Each structure stands twice: as structure tokens, then as C-alpha cells.
Image 1: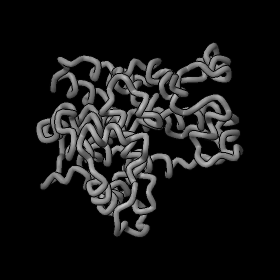
Image 2: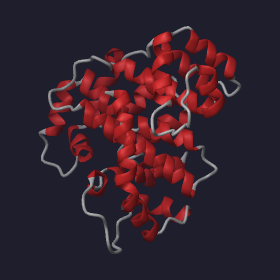
Image 3: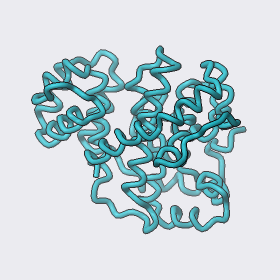
Image 4: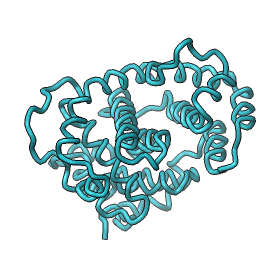
Length: 292
């Protein structure tokens, strides 16, 4: 049984106290409703943005960031939707509303808001890039938002369970995830509960729950594996202008071997991705300026 199943005593003790998890703010609630509705159209998105000038201006900021690289700029919502598409605008709206949800919240002392969002944005960009190269049947925009949200449970813990968050950092384990398992509550489990409470599409909940154990996924296998691989890449020293790899080694994490085989991602492909990391990270840094 995957260790991420919601069966630890510590987590069971928390489940009756789910009031500590927030309900989505009105904007986030409306956007999630649109995402669940596969028939949502341009008119509905326009109405949502026209009703909230603050959200609209933030969406335009994102649309004009270097990540999208639109020549001539985007100066109104209608053009943003026509140029980027309804799915991409929905994803930008979700990103902005998510930031609004947690903006100005007090967090655990050891939590770095800037580091968290940098890691999330970089993982999102890498998830989209992996899909573009190796899984074109999965929408690039969907993979971006899955990567962005993969660690949402860690943010929720830092805001709503600061003592538990700090406790995980005191555990003598090699990684945060292993330390969380030792405590009995992981950010994957908390994020999964949050995704369910907010009514996110099932693929979001599935990826959030098992992105550290993609080998245990039985649904949304490719999406989970791609996000896991993207996160592994984003944690590489190469992402922050460390030494670029010059020779082959067993760099694909063992948990991602199955999905790599399914998508024919070789060690050579992985090395190539590592070598593109500094450029992708530069774009992530530019996008981060829209967040922080």
C-alpha cells in the first residue's frame, strides 16, 4: 500500500479538525467551477474577469510576462483569451486566485514564500516542457498547472499547521518528504485533502497525492510521473546555475523509471533537459516577479 494513503494515525487525528483548511475564496471558487465545466466558454471567462478589475489586471500582467512571449503585448482580456486560449487563461486565473488565497498569511518561521513559489513555478514550467516533448496528448497548459499545484499541501501546512511544519524540519532525515513520513503527515496528504475540499478535478488530487511515489499511481499515471520527474529536475543544482552534466549517469530517479520507459525518455534525453535548466530557470525567475 502506498505510504501516501490517508491511513496514518497522525493524519486520522487531524481529519476531524478540517476547519483549519480554508474554503476557496470567491474568485478561486468560480474558477474551479469553470475548470470542472468542460463546456465553459470565452463569454463566461470574460464575465468573471470583468466583474473583478483586480483579478483582470493581474491576469494581464501574467499574460505579458516573458514566459508567453507575445509580440506587441496584450492590453485587454478579450485579446488575452483569443491569443492564449481559454484553457491557458483559466490556468492564469487559477494561479492568480491561488496567490490571493494565501497572500499576507502568516507562515511557519522556517517557510520561505519566495523559495516555495520559485520551486512551484520551475516545476510547472518543466512539467509543461516534458509534456511538449514526450506526451503531446496531454495539454501543456494542464501539465503547467499540475506542476504549479503539486506542493500546495506544503504551503497549507506552513500557514495552517506551522508547529507540524517546523516539527518535520527537526527530523534527522535526508529529505523533507521522508521527515514528514516520520512525523506521520505529509504535504502530499494535506494537499490531497485540500484538493478534494476545494472540488479540484480528480487529476489534480491524484497528482498531488502521489507525486513523490509515482510508481504507485494507478490513475493519471503519466501526469503523476511527469510532475515527479519535473520536480526532480527542479531540485537539481543545475537549475540554479550549478555545474552542467557532461557525461551520462543514472540520473532518472528510480521512482520515475516506469513513466520514462512508457514515454521513451532516455538518460540522454534527461541529460539534455538538465542542460536546458538554467534557461528555463531564468524564465521562472521572471514569472516569479509576477508573484512576489
